[in-house]
Image (cartoon, rainbow, N blue to C red; front, side, top):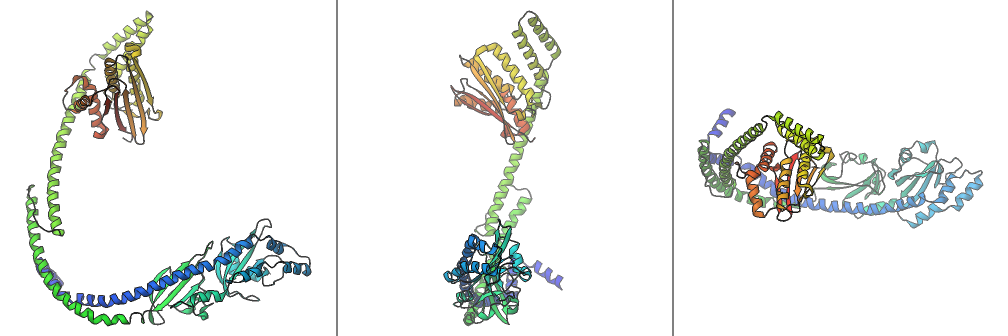
Length: 592
């Protein structure tokens, strides 16, 4: 049955599907709209109540934080009280001596007079000569086994807890518990500052809803209803484990009534635990008036049904017609027509899809043209590379005869005392031998620099003081492998054009440094430089596929090898100013 229904729906046209869908689900929009109208007013009333309660909780949080400052200030003062330290750490020989010490120390009493928030101060210390006067209390086994005492001795942080341990006179109040270290005595005490219960409860009396404050163990430390103080949250039966609830707003049933609960937390200054603020209110009285608007919702629903029926019909017709036109355009594209254009009006999704279709066709056409161009460029570069290799192979004819002749000249010059000529011949032989080894794919940078130095020394022999040079190399890249004869042609270009065009000579500076993942090579000279027009001609000549200038073969060779090996962005970058000189820079990636 379901299969037949699915086949029936799939066979319907889009506009028929829209109309059938509307007829089948019309009752759901009626319920949604009706419920939305009623729910809107209910939600507004609830939001106002939640917002008011949240603001009240935030106000209580601020007031409570200010109130807890007083005990904290007292504890900070007592931490530095040398009189207190002397009284509690002294080992008394008699009761009379202890009584005098107690009478002379009145530090605790003054704080209960100065701060109305403080109900009392107690200090626990392991001194068996002390007597419990409800302020200075010696630690016995009963106190030592209490949970609050053990927690205080285990941390230097302040803790706020409800003290309900059975003592001679129980505290039964929210109290600051803090370890008081005495490093010189190698002993610690525990200070307990109790809050005034009336002050805490009085802070909550003006709240419109049931509000209370609890410590991290779940004991109620303050409440609008004073009868809740001292009880645990479990006994109040809120129907939820408040110990596990984080701060936020919760909708739940409390004692059978739908209610909202606002939970917030306050972490007092320097405290290692928090206090939980809880406010609860029932939803029944708040949403009573919202139900009166239900009849308005019914009238709105009837109007929406009539408008929706007309709108669905119009949209279905317009949508299906435009989709059919777009479908025909896709069919033409699938058949290979890259000149098809979709003209569908409108700025909705179908109109945007039509424009994107045109962009897609244009992009496909452009990409195909780019592929053709790239193939042609790649083929041209391959042919240029082969031509370069052939020229290099041609330069290697009969190298042994040339080396032997140069060696004979060098030995003859050396024997006749012409050491400078012999050195130049030796450098020339080394330079030519390196040139003839250019068949290697990569060579260490230090060998490439040897060729550069050999060439520059030979040229210095020729031009004497008219040529000066310097080579600055980062030592960490000396073993990095580079294409052979990649720097020497640039140096040769700088020497030839610099010395010939400038009467007083030229200085050539070669700099090789590491820039993160790149090796930057620069060759700079202070020759005559070039005019902007001449510079543009040189750039065009080295990038040309054919040799248009014979004196630019070296630069074109270097440029083409860099582009073929590392890509367009690593080609030659030439800067020049007439009368100032020329700078040529290229980079090589270090991670290849």
